[in-house]
Length: 90
Image (cartoon, rainbow, N blue to C red; front, side):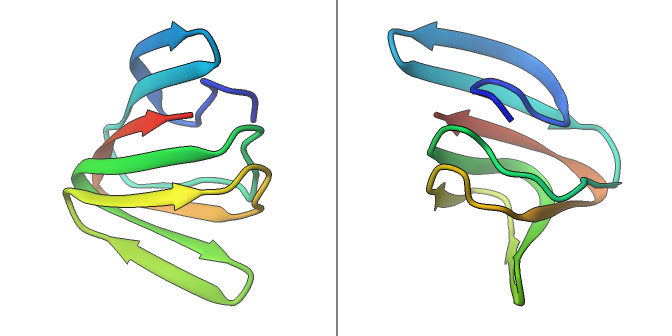
């Protein structure tokens, strides 16, 4: 996906030179198709639950968990049953 593009609903997005900051909402459970993001990103789960798979590795995140994605890393996401809200800096 290109910078600022996500499967969830983009609530707010700001671009500054080469940095894009986005707030993304998934109002309900969702299994996203396998994909990658063009840009590297710092991600923060504000509320809800979220997990992702990188090949055979799986990670689960709780609210206020912060993580890093390098560019073009192929992964598959699952937003938990109550949805999730995210803040991302690419």
